[in-house]
Length: 179
Length: 418
Image (cartoon, rainbow over all chains, first blue to last red):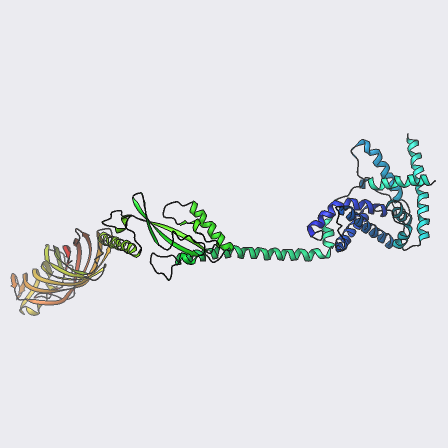
């Protein structure tokens, strides 16, 4: 059914936000992230015959997992194409969703700041941190995906954590100072 | 340290899941265009849609055409009241058919003032297909919406189980209810063969047609286009020689006879006695028959002639009983008497002389006869006409061979033979 053109669009519209959040953690530029998301969906629809429906009713979770895997691989491929070179420039403010609810606004701002900290990591560190901490890949899987050694993966992760701790500390000190 | 890392990892995971990010506008078109299978699928779908549309149109056309064919076929196959067993479909051969109202084509029942006959026919609708269901459902619908008693009625109870046949009961009404005139009027007189009834109806229709034809003929005055006619004619006439002026009115009176060749054309002749009066200068008088020493200066003459006209008439209808006619022909004269009052020069001496000539002379095709007339029917076979005319001389008549031109008005009454 998903092979039908009509249902592909439904899938795309429903999960493109989810896919963008995944890719934007890996890809620094917003516009580039959008392209990567589209590429990922194309890959997914082209290879949908490989998707096996399970007998239970949890097919959406399986589909989302499969989609996540495709998006991550597409993002990693893009980073490898760019040779893991660091990006230049800041992230524009208009890419962020503004929360209406005041209660959630602080929380969301915090989350936004944390993601910015991740994005500001060097691409290699950023990728490993995302793959290991957030997306749950093992170092061996990361090594295969990024064509690096397992030790490199561990090393990159350690360095990523160190940078993030430092950044978090600065961020907290900055807030304390404002208070 | 590990706890801090774990706490930090949890924080980052929560941030990754919940951070606020705009998704932007949908770019589905780009995705769709990039999927290789979609173009082929869309084209295939378009083709399929076209195919389905064409098939649907063909199916609808087929239903309509087939329905029409079947209805026409069933119309042709209708039993026309004859007991032609070859054409009739016997209910005995139809599985599931109700044999109560069946092969007995006619069943006379009473209904009000008129008698109603029922004509039974079995229609072969060829199997239980969608077409049959359409036909059956249509006829059932008509069954329930019959506007008058003469509409066919479908006996649902007689539909065969396999719906290969349906029985159509068609009532028709006999107007005459007088048993003397219509043997079918007696409800107790069972008629097994409807041929007799239909023959009676046909006879009645023929007589009605004959009457209609008669009425039609009588309404048209010119319906009887061919035949002889006779009449009498009379009227004043005026004559002159070489446009020298008219003197006094003469008279024409006589009989006419003609033959109507068609509605428009007729040939006519007659015999008219005509008295002509004229004046002429002596230069138009032929002296070859006069004494040599005599010179005619002028004369006033009169002639009694029998004119025999032969002409063709053409008439056009201008109203219910009126028509306009045009005629052209030639007139011959038989001169019986001529009287001339001369003014003479005899050996140079002027004198008057009256001469009467009673010798009979004939002048064949002496003048061209032209006329335009108005005719009106005064009865079924009679008509009256008024016809101004002009007779142009082709030959001279009388002792002096004078070219006498005549004009006048002819009033005639004619009657057609019947």
